[in-house]
Length: 319
Image (cartoon, rainbow, N blue to C red; front, side, top):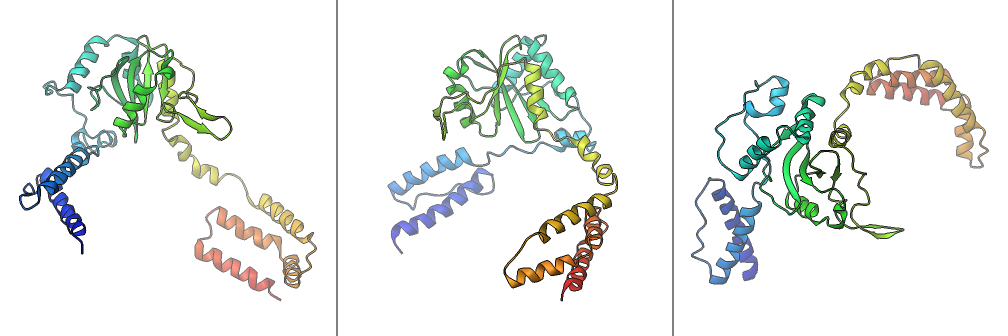
């Protein structure tokens, strides 16, 4: 085995030990037994591991979990006033103080109630300290696994300089889209990663960013359309049993079965086994087959019963 393979195996073990160290489950790896070049390579690996390790969002405590609160498992508690100082919290306090009575704040405050608590608004997201000329962080709106980062920005001509949105979405891959809104909330649009980068069309070739973005609209309508498309329509599912049990399927099923059999019998096959199949089909009772179909549609037959019914039909058709 070559030295490179041996070092690769050793490096993998050292990285696993370093991960345990980062998580507080072990000592920091000792590199004193490595050469200078190997130590430099491992330190570079440590930098990468430290930057990428455990980037998944942390699970909140049960008493702060919005799902648990919605299900009644945990009682909602008033927000704490003694928040630690951080750029995100500073930005949240700045937004609350400077935008309390603005149109943007009123729309965001009403977003949760309009969707019966299914959309959560966070005024102090992790990316609140992110800065870019012409893009002022406002809030993060989340529903299920879809997160929208909202910025106050100039709407006119944003496609001429889409790099800000593209850079932000690359830096924060957990964010699904970026919302841009004017200060008066009268112009707003939502941009995805695909909208902020060039794309290629088989007919038109390379297309500039922004071709798929809808026309700007008022903030409330833009947010409502966005989340309506992403939230499940529970009221449609609740009426499914009534829909399945509505009406009598028998007459329609018999008519369709007869039509399908008649169409198949109009064929004029030349191969002997196909002629035999048509002769057997001509002797099939459409009512018998329709009864099996209706039983499967209405869940009156389970899987085993369905197989047994079809087997009996096949045996009756055999010459």
